[in-house]
Length: 149
Image 1 (cartoon, rainbow, N blue to C red):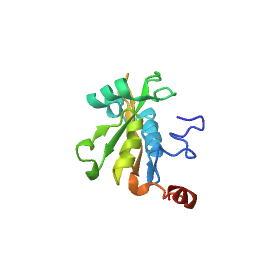
Image 2 (cartoon, helix red, strand yellow; image 1 turned 90 degrees about the vertical axis):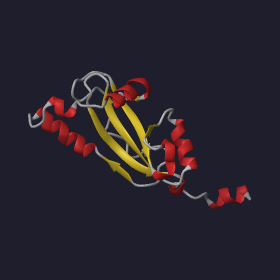
Image 3 (spheres, rainbow, N blue to C red; image 1 turned 45 degrees about the horizontal axis):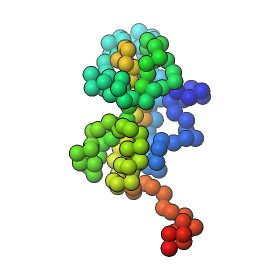
């Protein structure tokens, strides 16, 4: 989380995204309030799939914030991509991060999901999703088109 308390900085959109973005921070906050208020059990929210835990532990992006459930410094973000255009790449974890730029350059449209996962207590929550791809890249400016010929 950023210093503003938001799950991501709205002034810094996800890499190469010009398409719609859905932020799930309100749903996350509601889930955590229900957990703290006793309306949800820890087992209801700390139920990450073993593959998600493995991806978080081995290739997830470190988050500079403690886990909201166990307070350990083991929070990670894992990015998954889905889309018909991706074919065999659909459903894969994006790693390294530069691979997302390659996908954006090669495919017209797909959806990227950013999932927060704690590798200690198995807390997990969808942070945001966004649609991206060549279709959403901004067209080159007039100056860039003239330079390209």
